[in-house]
Length: 226
Image 1 (cartoon, one colour):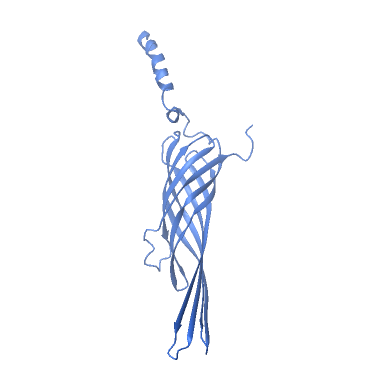
Image 2: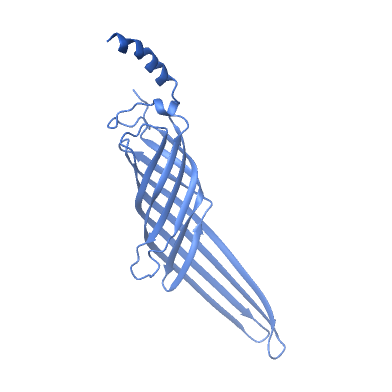
């Protein structure tokens, strides 16, 4: 007993000298301190999609935002949104067989908006450290629109072609998220995911369609703590 008493002060001093992230002691089943959180990431998501009969590939960037709720220290659910609108125009001029001037103009517009709803599960027996790893899994809805207009102008005739294609496609999104708590409210977060196309008619539904992002996540409560 006397020997243990002499060792105890040294053990306590050693514990106090550990880094701050290693000193946190929270019971695994204790409720989270802050339940709601919002995040903003800079990154991208790649998708392959179809609009009736056309296959399109696009990358949504430069970032996205999300809103989440922490049910337990291990389990959270979040919903996000990201969108991108692209426009392209091609202008060509040529000389016809009869020497007439032919002008060709083509305009294309691509719009993609993704809405992921992801389950976030903390991969730790005790989610107590400032540095942590999460597993991500859930569905993503992609709203896609492809609009094309083309004009061919000459001295003799004018030809016009137009099509407007829309589709709503589902994906299974999964990946990993790495986080580091800067303060009790603020966290540095990075996610790496993949989107699997759930349309069984497409051969590329299992092709890698990656996504990545890095940014900040802020946790808070809607009501003041009593």
